[in-house]
Length: 189
Image (tube, rainbow, N blue to C red; front, side, top):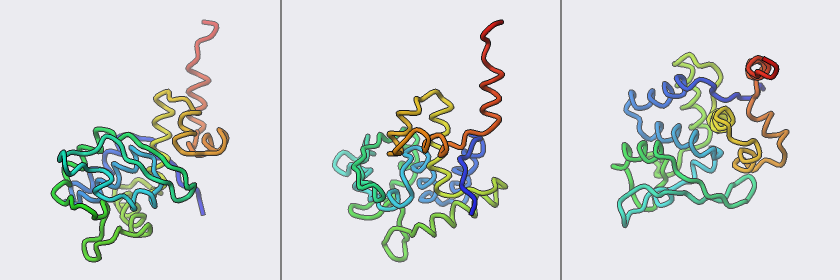
């Protein structure tokens, strides 16, 4: 099985998020926006409830979300980007205390990891984006953080990786990225 790659084109990322809005599927739009802005694993995203992200007393999206990662067992606090607040605002009519954020309306439970994968994969295929999965969205966060100049050590901490080597491999540094580095430095000119 081939490894998933991050989405490296912001326009494609926007098309994927907008795809679900155009299909009148705000829940799935929220899944994409949350995934790329929090770098949480899909299992951790699917466990989120409205109470985790929405303050019902103040009637607004929370500034942070606190999770305990399933894979590592480590607690993590994630600041919620304004794009997440905007996406949740479109979906706030569905907000109910104690309910899962990414919920199957028929069962009242969170959708499964495989269902989330199928939703993302099908949309990406329809948009001609190639091999995209939920994990691609997590990787996309790190890729764009790295491209914007965020230190690898900080990205490593966000991902809870054990080494910088793992993080570098995870980001999918491509040859064209290396070429830009080689050709972009002006050392003796």
